Length: 622
Image 1 (cartoon, one colour):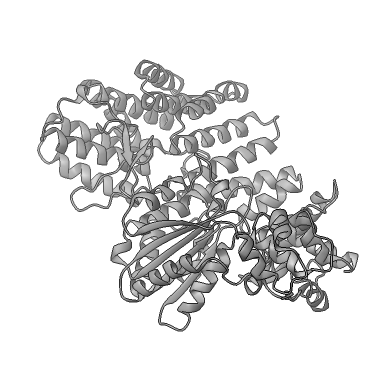
Image 2 (cartoon, rainbow, N blue to C red):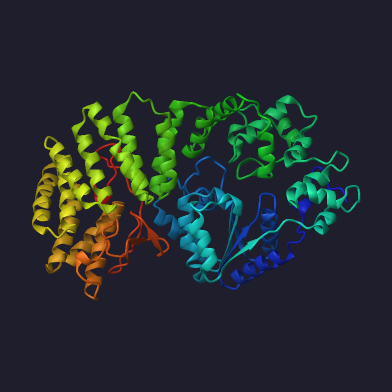
């Protein structure tokens, strides 16, 4: 047969040589209707037919009472936090960075438990870290939900350090989860797509490698010479369209998430133009905008943009996107960077980093901050130092202590240049904590002492530095010094009315009392931890949890404090911490929490201090 030029990819490909995988998916969906949850990961190269397979399974579910929730990840340079869940859970309220990650996890879990559902998240290779946390939270509770969770990804685009690696590890080892890989089509499968005999199946298979999308493109135009690449096959579909229409295709190719319906008038795209573009069969309407029916088609059109032509296209898109609300800083950053617009790239990257950190997507926050720094005017030392400090804290939150120490120490000469002794004190304070968590106690104490000496003329900075010095003394068993430091901090917090500083000092004081066996100190520490959680002071709550856990474990034989290597959040647990959403061990700082006295051990995003711009609170510092 000859595949019609206007046929969609899914119509053309059908389900050749995918019957076994379809049966597995259909079985999972049927089990969800019966109340049993499961998860399936579908992997394969671009164009292997992953989306077609999922579409077929969802189509079977359409005649049942199974609800279908389907979302995808976008090919932005830096993923937008909670990208797929913004689309999936739009009815629950906006996920704009102001909703804590824990609330997103619980809300999604509640939605999926409410009725039989298939949850599809496509293109996992473009996923953000916060969405991975949500999915890990869900798959570890899959048996308690009438839900089939289906994810798709390209295995050749997920490296060892990719955000999705922990989730794929879950699919590899946990019960009720499995991974299915789609192989290329065989010569027989290609022949089934070329039934009219006008093309040689073996030659087509040799050229396409059995890639289903490539075969589809070749089959649609059997009278043309056999193209050697997917690009050639796709661009043959655009022959004969007007230059203005082709430029709209290039605009769409420059918007990897989608060309939003709301920006079309600003771009001069009218209904007749849309009809002409529809006839090419390259575009589809999806999630309120125009998208290419396959990423390979988008890349093919994008490759036609001449040298120097990409920046003007992104500028047009950026100008148009700024006119609509709500704005998405991750998308705006993408276009501002491509447009080489330094001012807007810096502004939107900072907004995107702030949003990413609040949602728990700290890996993406690091990337956005590095983008902002790359565009920042080098003549502004105070602002650069502030950004480097923020970057250091996000690197710390992603267990990258070495880079965090490098970033914060790079601020020392900048604070000197700016004549900001308080800023320099804060930088040494951060360095003290990072060095301590990096198992370098002597260096940590040196930085802490330097922070105290630099802050003599700044009460708030002095109080914060004294708390840090007291915290290090507490970890070393010098409780007299801890009490002295906390006394100073309590006095300053009272004089300034600074509740967060008082809370931080209170947690360390309660932990000290607990170590000394003071009656009621455990209950007091748990109360303070809950207050810290309510304020989204992640590290402070983590410090409290780990010390409560230590006091419990020491009573069952963990041994003396000095015998245990303490984790970055003060835990005696062999140098590991636990993900709040999954409960599995994770290396590095910023993640430690345990379920104690009925409290929820949530890992919550850190929040920027209202008292000082760009200051983020390790162990509750504000």
